[in-house]
Image 1 (cartoon, rainbow, N blue to C red):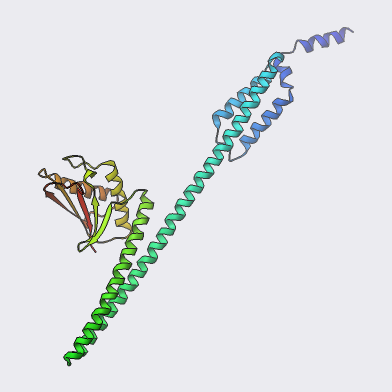
Image 2 (image 1 turned 180 degrees about the vertical axis):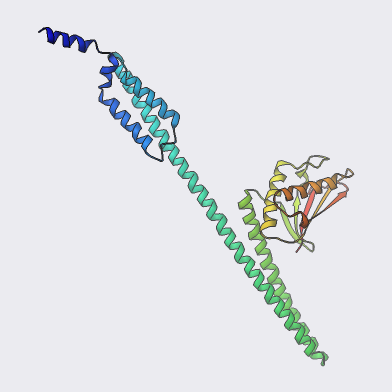
Length: 293
C-alpha cells in the first residue's frame, strides 16, 4: 500500500510539461514540420513561419493541463501557416521559373527569325549582284545596235528596279525583326524610326533632355539601351548622332552624351560620329541617330 501511494505521489509531482509531451498532437505536429524540412522544395522557404511553428509546438509540449487546448490550437495553426506559406513560396518560385523559360524561348525564337531574315537578305543581295553583272554583259553586247541596246536597257532597268524593291523590303524586314529582338533583350522600347535617303533615322523626342542641358531623361536612357542592343544585333554600319539646342554648345554636348551612352551599352566608339547644331530645338525632336544603309 505504501509503495502504491508513493508511486501516485511521484506521478502527481511530475511537471505539467512532461504530461503535455505525451499529447499525440505534439508528435503529429513535429512530424509535419519534419516533412517540410526534409522536402528540398520547402526546406529553404518560409523560415520565419517554420520557426514560429516550432516554438508553438515546443510550447504545447511544455503546456500545463489547463493551457493544453489553447496551446494545441495555436500550435496547429502555426504549423498550418508554415505549410501554407511554404507551398505558396514553392508555387511562386515555379511561376517565376516558367516566366523565365517563356522569355528565353521568345528571345530564342526572335533570334532565329532574325537570322533567317538576314540570310534571305543576303541571298537577295547576291542575286541582285548577279543580275546586275548580267545586265552589264547584255548592255555591252547590244552596243552595236542602238535599238537593241535601248530595248535591253529598258528591260533590265525594270528587272533591276523590281529586284531592288525586293532587296529593300527584305532589308527592312530584317531590321524590323532585329528591332523586336533588341526590345525583347533590353526590356525597353526603341525610339521612333523612319527610313530616308540617309538611312534608318531614330528620333528622340523633345523631352529626351532636361531643358537647356545635356542630361538624358530616364525614358531616353532606356531607349538608348534598346538602341545599343539593336545596333549590335542587326546593323553594323556607321552611325551619325545629331542633336539640337538654342544655347551655344548644348547641341554638341547632347550629341556627345548620346555617344557616350551608346558606347557604355556596348557599341563600338569607332562607328559613332557626333554633330551638335545650334538652333531652336523643335517640340518634335531633340536628337537624331542616323544608321547608314
